[in-house]
Image (spheres, one colour):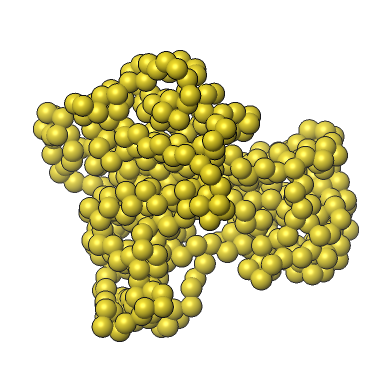
Length: 478
C-alpha cells in the first residue's frame, strides 16, 4: 500500500491543498474520476457564464436600436456556441490534469475513492484493465464536490430529462423547454435559453424566483425573467409524462393552500431539472473513517474544517455552507494553513459574496432585511437606483439598484446590487466588511467619475454621518 503525507479526494479546489503540500516537500496524492478542476470548470460556473455572455451579446444586438444604433440579428449558430465553450473549458481541465501528471511530488489517481479504514482509501480505477489501488494518507482532505439533485417527481423514471450538467453542451437549442426549479441555476439557464429564442417555462415553489436573495432582488429578477420565460412561481412539479417525444409537466400550487383547480400543464420538447445539488459523499463510506455527516450527506466539520475524524478535513460543496467555487478556494486556504502550518485558522462566511448571472446581474454579501428582522437586529437600509450615477443613467439600467444595510454604529451588515457589473461593484464592500469596516470606509474614499462605482458610493454616503457629500444624483434626468 502506497502511503502519502496528504491524500485529497477530489480534483477541484481541494487539489490546491495537495499542490501546496508538494511545494513544502511533502508527498501528496489526488484522487479524481472525472475532469480535473471540479464542476466549476466543465459543468458549472465557467461554461454557464460563457454561454450567458453569448446571450448578453444577442440581447445587445436586439437592444442596440434603443441607443440609436439600428442592428438586426439574422441567425444564431447554437451548435458553434456550445462547441466552442466545450472545447475551451475541457482544454483547461486537460491542462490541469497534465500539470498534476507531470508533477514529481503529486500523484494523480484516476478513479473513485472510498474509505475502507481511517485514512485508508480504496480506489476503483476508471480503466477497467487496472486493479483497485489502496492508499493511505497521514492527512486526508474530502473535497469530492456535488452533483445535480433529482427530485422525487411522479413519472420521472419514465421520462428523459436534462440536468444542469447536460444542458450546457446541447448540439441543438430546444424549441420549447420546461425548467423545474426557481433558484439561481434555473434562473440563469432560463435567461440563457430564453434570450436565444427558446420558449421557456420556469416552475418554482416560492412566490418569487431566487427566493434566498433579498426580497427586492428577487422581485426584480422575477420580473425580468418574465420577459424571457413564462414564470410559474408558487408551483411545484407534481408529475411528469412523456408522449411522442414530448414531455408534459403537471404543476400544482405549492404550500398549504393547494387547490387542484389551479393545476397547470406545461408541454415541451425538453425538461430541465434545476432543483439544487447534493454532495458526492454517498459513495465514500464515511463511516469506515469515523467521519460524520448530516442526513443530507454534508460532512460535519468544526470551524477549522476538520471533520469528526482526526486528520480528516473537508472543504467545498461537501461542507454545504457556501456552495460556490470562490468559497471552496477560500476553504482550501484555510485547510492548507491548518494542515501544513498548524495555524488554527477558522473559516468566516460573514463576508462571503455571491453573484447570479441573470439579466440584470445580481451580487450580494451579508444579511438580507428579512434575516435581520428574524434575528431582531436593529438596522438601517438605503436603496439607491443606478440612475443616480451618470453612467447608470447613460446605460439606462432602469431596474438596477444598490441596497446598503448597516447597524446603528455603522457596521456594514449587508449589500445587495442589481444591475450591470454587479459582481465587480460589490467587492469594495466585501473588502470593507472583511476588515471589520464601517459605512464610512466605503463612502470615504474617492470614487472614479463617471463610473458605476458611484452608485455604491451614493448608497453608503446616504448611510454615512459625514457632514459633507459629493455623491452624484442624476435621478432628476435618468
